[in-house]
Image (cartoon, rainbow, N blue to C red; front, side):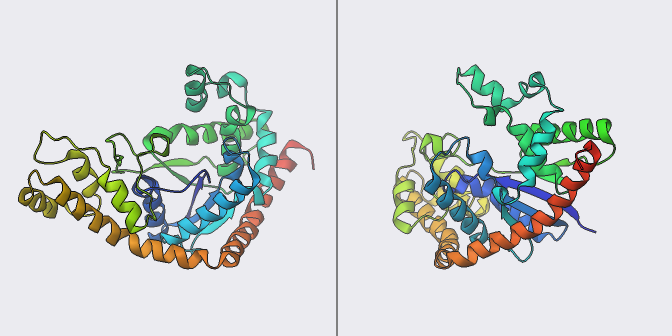
Length: 315
């Protein structure tokens, strides 16, 4: 039997090419490897820590589903659903709360970072590792694809599973992190890591005009023959062997090199953009995909929740 792979993505905004090369592409590659039975969920309850606007949440969730289907996440192969459509996530999280101490949660990177910056965090943010553990453990997950800096998420799920198993008997499988190797750190238009918080992104489904505006705004060093920031982005879209010849032939011609980058990004994005536009015309179909995914996910999750409730003695 195939191993179970699960990943959740918060619907907190539109993706950029950094999101694609940093994670989204790898998810589709893993699905198409045919090694895993894949569950991908829209983590709207996790997103509630950042979004307190009902229409924005609905729109973002639908958009994210369309985005993933547009890049090749085939709902015939993967189970795609909203976290909020499977109530077992929050119910199991409530059970796990009784096993987890506050000092243990205070070791979470997100909590430590927030407190170091003097931020006042809500309980949902403080408690997110527990809900995340429930997300993972409900499906008998074998592998959770994460970057090296996100390994702690899976470690929390393993610890909480072990705590439950020790207290009530063997119930939950201990998942393993699937570290995404050779993942590109995509630079933004200002040279820093591409991030919405820096306003330095190139949208994944950008129009030709949007691509042109973003690329022409890339910060360049006028002292060199090769614009480093342009080249760093360009190598995502064309083999470096070809790029070296192009950049050698256009030394110091920053405008020409940016125009070449615009052509290559647009050639890559255009089919994704067109596929997305077609999916966006039929939102009922996308909602049906999410509903069918929720039905499948509920069958698996409710079975595991029922087992856990019997173990703790509430049934």
